[in-house]
Length: 448
Image (cartoon, rainbow, N blue to C red):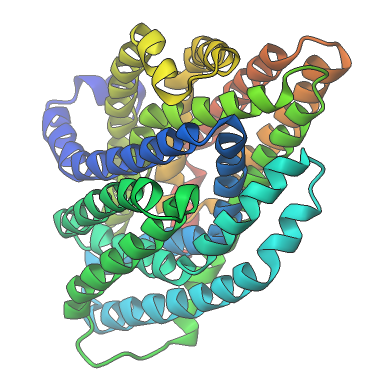
């Protein structure tokens, strides 16, 4: 089916409504993630630019530890979304049980590694000493919640694949309200100070994981059992996503290191980068919501052997997501001079945050198109190619250009921001080419 035929198809409206029914709860969930992040940055800013920079570093390292959990959700959603629409109900129940057991075990391992090795990891980074000293205890506290985050992410994927996204939305509403409320209580009402950000996160993740496990339990009809065969199927889809996330997060950390090499105001620019990423997440997180929704929609269609519908749903979901991203981008850009001072009282940080917004957000619609199509490819199990495209765009384009333009040629932070845009354009072009090539339709038949 050609692109023009998709637009003119009389059933397009029905597909848009189906796509939106999955996407809007995910969009709200991502908005909750954004609110939590903004609250974190706001509170960190109240303790000074050094704490704000330290929070940004700790948060990026946090993601390094939960990468495996994020990758497992890709395999879980891909396999379960197809089993859910098939007639293999016994295998579906076993797959749900297997995915939850896997997530909990992996979460325990991540918690152990975080508690015992996070401090050493931070102190080996070549960044200002004060940033290292402030970020170490925060990451240590975060580590206690890794197991709950793994369980929450996994059960969110289970509910998403099983057409129970609204249950997931309820749990994440509780997480959001609890996290933000405890943020302010612990940070400003106790001796914890900025470390209260981490404590609030751990408690809210625990609450959300308990709620979601209660919802997902209904799909496990014969008790908790583990299937090595299903685990291997999920792992085969998940490991490329794990590598993708590892190299993506390491790429962001390398950007922090490159920023620290700038000859002037490097701490202020690192703080601005932290703020810019959080503001940008108001747009990126909805795009990622459509990415995950697209994985389910494409996976469900492939499970019913409806390849043309799978392709069509992926395109329509991407178009819908891009439209929303364009709207959000305009809102953020037009209100940037109000938003940036809200997150920091330092004039240098504010000005550099504004520069980041005005440069980086130009390519948000391009980013959204590539990210959402990538979700469709993930739903088909084509995660190896998605990994290659994203990792190549970051490490062969973004990182080298950032160093060259930002440090070597002396263009400073704005050279780094433009390098990020160039890498996004490359990633989008390659993702579009892969999706319209349709080879992923044949590959999907090998997944389940």
